[in-house]
Image (cartoon, rainbow, N blue to C red; front, side, top):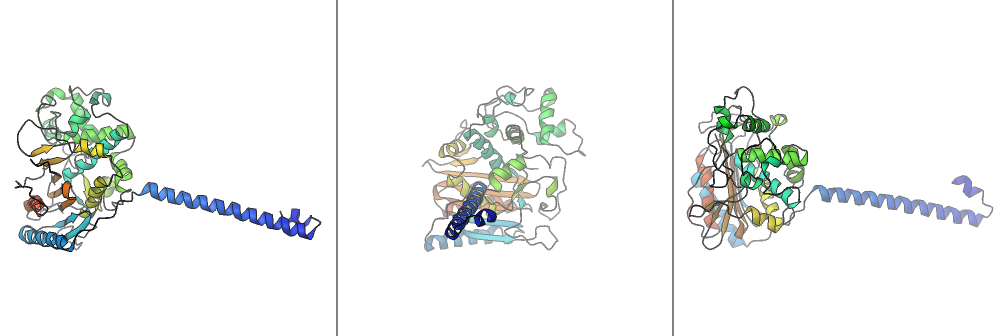
Length: 406
């Protein structure tokens, strides 16, 4: 460029041309930088989901929720040997938050807001909502037969929907794998469950006709995990990380894999004795999400936000599917629920696996949330739904434990 400029005979022309070239160069560079900046912004906005800010509550309401939560905590958890974390929130605001104990008993790693713990069957809410996200995006039909995904699967009538609502009639793999004589020195994987169901159907006890009644079975969500993997071409840990955990900045949440042994907390019985890994500890979809109360609150806020799920998708998830028995208890698609005569709902899921026990209760009319996670068995944790009465007249709770644990 310099040679071109100096070859011009007029000084004015030289400066004029130089000015034009420099200006053009600056404009080009500026445009390039603007594009780069735009790409960074676009990447950030694609990677992270900006949740709405929590909405304000009055000081009077905040103080009432705080005092009632503290009173409940003091009565049931403070002196019970509770080892874990608890949050009570309203409109996305954390009102009450407590952590107690040691992540690894007899160690020195104090439980904090960043200590991930196994939430057992609360994992089903992630698996179930991942399926509903694929349905929302047109990637599957809820009434697809499982033979569409697993041609050898000979269990008539079983669909994706009947897995989600626990009406498939399929028995629980936690028991039939052992009954089939599985070598307990070998970890069971999701594909092993499917293979045994296909190849040894005649030996599996406890099958019942599909869609005749509700029967909670971890098998349903092990199979749903395999369907997600078949459709997406990714493992469930990868898919949930990319779809939910990273975009929502759930930084302490993961599905346990062999690479996570260093950061996964052990679980303990009520006397502080650790549970050893057994042959059923590496299946997922039904369990094996490790998370924190704060991360679960992000998940709760995401469900309210409209940023991931359409209202129609949530309506499908929260619709009762098991109406053959009277009463307020029911099950939707991956969610337990209480249905009250006045039309109000509590949407929730408990979890229990070895010594891990957890409660995730969502009082959706009041945008209120109760979360408790512990890694030392403590039946009092399941009393946490009693705190729903702080937000309204939600009746008595029977303090049921989490289903599906061993």
